[in-house]
Amino acid sequence: MNLLIKSATIVDKNSALHFQKKDILVENGVITSISNHIENNDYQVIDLPNLHLSRGWFDSCVSFGEPGFEERETLKNGLDTCKKSGFTSVISTPNTNPVADQSTIIEYIKNYSNLHIVDVHPMGALTENSDSQHIAELYDMQSKGAVVFGDYKKCVADANLFKIALQYAKTIDAIIQVYPNDKNLSQDAQMHEGIISTSLGLKGLPKMAEIIQLQKDIELLKYTKSKLHICHISTAESVDIIKTAKQEGLDISCSVPLANLVYTDEKLTGFDSKFKVLPPLREQQDIDALRIGLSDGTIDMVTTDHNPLNIELKKTEFENAEFGSIGLESAFGILNSIFSLEDSIEFLTKGKSRFNIKDHKIEENERANFTLFNPDVEWIFEENDIQSKSKNAIFLGEKHVGKVYGIVNNTNFYVSE
Image (cartoon, rainbow, N blue to C red):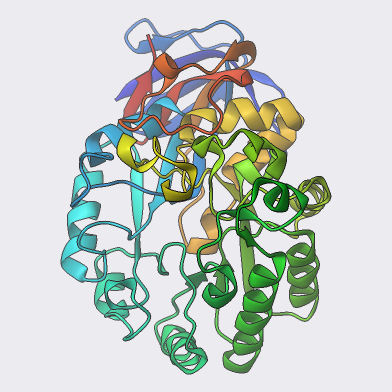
């Protein structure tokens, strides 16, 4: 692929080219020239209004239905959604059917992604069938491309089993991912425990379910001196706990779901199941702490926690509805509406190195891997904007600031019409 990108404003805090407008020449998937003006009549030209460009966006937690739940999402449509939303690489979660706890499933996902413009890095299940009984074949899955191991939206309640998993992961230089939620304290919970849950008569999920499990996991991390990624923190207390753990020198990272940076539990007063997510929407003090933690580096990355669900799992009585929302399509527009453009792009590009995924710079002789966008377009996210096969979108009806044009990745590119 030979490509000439015209008059693109580069957005990258860590680059000397930050906020400079440049022409970029890509030949055979490699950036061969970055200059104020490049002419080449033989190459495909991308010249778009108010064009901005950054390193390729990354999401550390994206669910695809396939294999097994193709009615929710297929790999093809899921990856098409990624590219249209500006993501050049994602980590796929193991909540498939069967659960991605074997090397054959990891290989299937990896082989499929090799045929697509978006790079998929599979997460392997930590335990067999994600049931917290027996450790899965981590080494075999790692050899086929798994970059991290965790049971989607589950913690390992058995402390000894989790200790052994951390110790084994250390021998193969692997990273374990956990979701901090004590299942005994959160059983049958419908939303955040607080004034709103009491007024609605719904069983609440207390903050301490997250806090206690997080503290427990960190103590085991101290003992094993392994690597741990905490997926989906949602409370102010968790931010403080993570900050202390990092100050103590532990090899720990964490992410926050996009929805928990935006909404409080007040959104649930209308019993609208699109706001039923896990971790649950908390309180304003938590949002404030999470935003500060993200800005000061305590929180390492934002995830959309994109989780397509078929309609009968969401359009039902609130207490019977499943937790989860799609989010890829809204990532940029929502982040860019609450943070500066510089910070929004930083949050969308952070996290790859934690999982040993190559983060390509916007420099000559580097592999082409970037996202194209217009940061100033304001629009309302409506159902016809949803690219996902499932329509369970928490941000439906919200104003978004900024739209994606497309992506360039190696020898392939996509630009929306």
